[in-house]
Image (cartoon, rainbow, N blue to C red; front, side, top):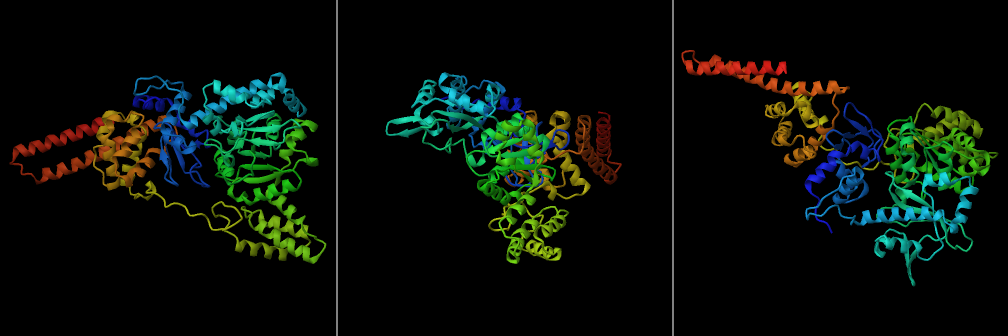
Length: 620
C-alpha cells in the first residue's frame, strides 16, 4: 500500500480544481456577486439559499448550519469518502499523477469505496460489450420492441448480463478484483456452490450518482425460466443507497437546474422514453418509493428556493399509481416549487405512450399536467358517494385539509369555490371547513415537512456566531469589510498593502483576533490552504467567523469594481490607522514644550512621515 500523499501534491490538486465545478455536481449554484456563488445547502433543509461558495479562495460556508470547508471536506461530507479518497478522485479528474511519501508513483485505488466504484465501472463495460454478442438477442429484441435502438442503448449505457453462473465473476477476477470486493459491491452473491453472478440473463441499466459514477445496476427479467423478480437491483452497499438515488439524474441535472423543472416517472424505460422525446428533465426512483431523501436531492438540483420551479409526477391511473400519488402528496409541502401530476391517457406509461403515439405525445403529457392539489381533491372525492348527504359531508371533511394546505393564499379561494361546486355544498359551509382545517394545521409559512405525524417543525441547530451579529456602526463595518477583502482577494491587495492593513488597530475585539490570524499567515496568502491556515490560528469560537468572512458576498458587481474595491478598503484601513497616529502625534506635539527641541523635532518628523505615507497611499 502506498504511503501518505505528498503535501505539495495535495495543494497542487486543490489549486487545479474549481470548487464551484465540484459543488455544482450536487447543488444548483447561482451568482451572488463577483466571485461568489450560492445555492441551497446540501447539509440541511432550507427554503432560502444560505450556502455560499468562493471559487477564488476554494472555500464554502453555510450561514444557516455553519458547515464549511474546502473541496476535499465537501467530497468527504457528500460522498462519505476519506480524505485520501477525495484527493485521489480529484487528482484523477484533473489528470494529475499523485506521489506518495514512500517515493512510489500513483498507487492503484486501495480504498473500499474506490474499489467498489472501479468494480462497478468494469462490470458496466462488460455488460455493454455483452449486449452486442449472440447470446443477447433477447435483450436487443426487448429494446427494439420498446422503440430503443443501438444509439439509445449506448446513450444510457445499457448492457446485458449473460445467462451464466460466473462469467462476470471470472472477468472481474481477471481484472484484479477480489471475491470480497465483488461481494461488497453487490455484483456477486454467495451460495452453497460458492459465489455466483447476481445478474444472469437480464438486461442491465447502470445506475449512476449525480456525478456520473456507476454505483449500482438495475436488471430486467427477460427469460421465462428466470424465477426472480421482474426487476432486480443492486443491494445496499457502501456506495449505493436506493432511497437517495434517482435514475437519470446525472443526465438530467443540468436541464433541471436550467429549466427549474423535474419530471418524476416510474421506471428506467420511462426515463429513456422521456429523454429521447425531448423531456430531458425526467428521473425515476430505483426500486423504492419516492421519499424525503429524494426530495432533498431534487431541491438542491432545482435550486428550490422560490415558487417558480415545477415538479411533475407521472402516475399510472390504477391502484398502485393512486398509492404512489398519495405518498408523493404527503411530502409535497417539502418543495417550494409548485407540484403537478400528469396522468398518461389509456393507462399508458411514458414508454408505451412514445411507442404508440410518438415523441410529441410524451411532450404533450408533460404539458397537460394538473396541479397536485386538484388531482388529490378529485382522487379523494372519487372515494365517496356524493349523491348522499353523508357522502358529501365525509368528502368535505377529507378534502378541506387539502385546500387549507395550499401554500399560496391567493389560490385557496379559487379551490374553495371549485370544491363547493364539485361537492354541491354551499360555499359558506365549505369555507368554514377549510378555515377549521387550516387552524388545526401548521401555519402556511412554516418549514417544509410531510403531512403525516407531528406537525411541529424539526428543531434546527442553534445558529453559529455570525457576521450579522456584529455591530453595524461605520467603524466595525470597515473592519469587517477589510477582513473580507483580505481573506478573499489577498492577491489583488498585494503583499505589502496586506501586511500594512493586517497590522492596523481594530476596535472590535472579535475582528481584531481574526486580523491577528490574517497577519500571522500573510506570507501564505497565495497558498491553496490560505483560509484553513487562518481558521486554524484563531480560537475555536471564532473559526466560524473566519469562514463566513471568507465567503460573504462583496458589494461590487464587476471584476474591475471588485479589484478597486478591495484595494480601496485595505487603503481605508491603513489610512484610518495613519489618521489615528496623526491625531495622537498632534496631541503629543501640543503637550510638548517647544523648548525641548529634540523631542519637538522628532514628533514633527513623525508627523511628516505619516502625512507622506497617507499621500503615497492615495497615489497608488
